[in-house]
Image (cartoon, rainbow, N blue to C red; front, side, top):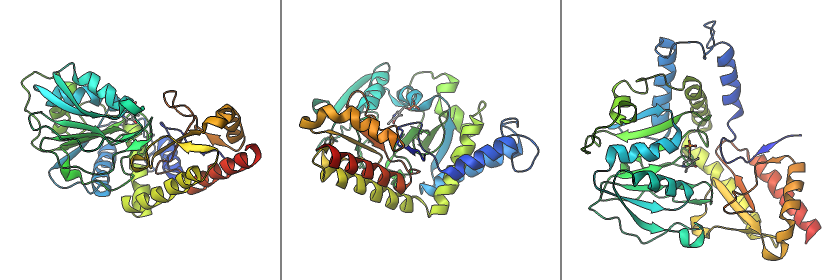
Length: 356
Ligand SMILES: *Cc1c(COP(=O)(O)O)cnc(C)c1O
């Protein structure tokens, strides 16, 4: 049976990226060696790294004056690296979910943290509006897509202080005005590649403003000098990112990817909104295109497990909601085919018809 992969992360990747990565593991470009066996300082790997960085810049339309680097440690290490490198006295954070809370926790090791708005009062089911970014802080940190709760902040705001964003789960899903940001980071394993590599987009001239000493590996400056090659980078994960970026380019770029994402999300949200049985958990204007969260209405709550089983029997993978929301979460990342969304919709409609 065909599987429909709605996993939240690691998650579905373009089939062609997986196939080409598998080939490169067996024999990289016909050189008679595996991608896994070559030196990260060889010209073969340098070519991979250069193309990955430049395609990433091209696909995201990153202006000059920004560098892209690939690091280990996941987005979670960035929760600590960001304040280590940027927080002198005080930073501002937008509290929109568990990942934002984790970022806040790390920042508190380095200085004062001001939470300027939070949606915790309603279990993070909306993006706060109408907040003012203070001008006396070292930076303002946002999480653009809240993977667990299914809310998304989809506009690039003006900020009087350096704007820093965790874009782990919506990177390359829509065009971004990178010029508004001082730093953007994310784990690759939602929309870009396999687990094990983290992308960081960093604006020139934003470093060097903190007084503390920073250990080499945690200092962005170290990784910018010989980009992504201070120590051994995650070569395999980077290669798969390259294949994903090539896939995006072949599709027509991020604009084309976004059009698909809009279509997929609309299909599923329309189904939820027209359902007598299912209901979305996130306020409409804050809804994510990447993680679509829904539950059963109160009178049908008892049928959630049955639907889960039914959906499984139809090939749906990974639609169980995070324990802090319950119900269901369908992650509809870039590489998820439209047919998978349709299959989920068909399963929902069929189940509803038979169980109302
Ligand atoms: C998955 C995720 C993280 C954590 O990423 P790791 O690479 O596992 O550290 C952080 N932020 C967001 C928004 C995520 O979706």
